[in-house]
Image 1 (cartoon, rainbow, N blue to C red):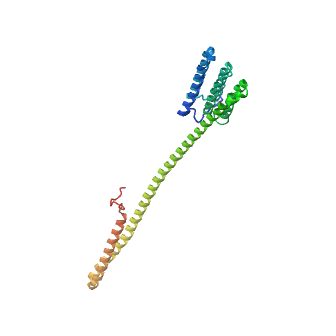
Image 2 (cartoon, rainbow, N blue to C red):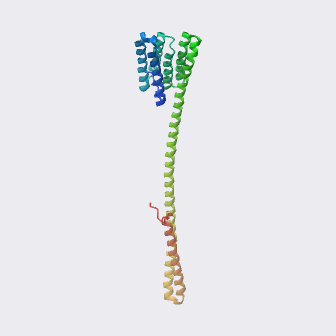
Image 3 (spheres, rainbow, N blue to C red):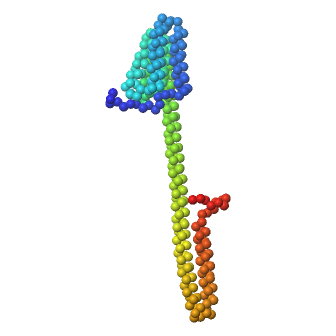
Length: 273
């Protein structure tokens, strides 16, 4: 057993409705057992075997066996237990309902081909004893339980597939939400970087243009100083040009500084940074 690996079925516990239905099936078997007068001499044996079946069924239902070998041994033992009940009175068709419950449980415990192999075996065991004991009439009686022995596992498989699909959809939704959050954060970083780059460009433009204008103002101021000493009549045009350069430099600075200010939102409030 040391070389085995524990099996991991998708789900080993049924939903509430399926659980109630399963125990109603078992209750029906017990009630039929108590109701039949012919069983009275052997009633303790029937009830003991049915109680043992119920205890093992419930234990495996709520505390699943992890090792595959023990799982197979469990279903073999439970099948032999039901066959022992049938051998006490082969004509009791209600006993085969216990095979139906085992088929349901096999769908919970096993996966893949092993699951359907056990469903097929338990379905065969559901019909074979009644057919041997009662002939064609027994087969006719067994057809309904055999059908249920297939429908129950199919219900389990469909439920598991739906649950797996829901888990997959939820995982995909979580991934999409995470990607959306990352994209939003990345977009914010890109916008912030673009704003920083634009402000850096404006600062460079401010430095270059204003520096050139101040240099021009400096040259014209020097020329005005020379004209004041040598040719005062030409000083007025020079001062007017100097004034125009100063006004142009001031307007350029105001324009660039306005571009550097944060844009106001619709409410007239500046965004915080």
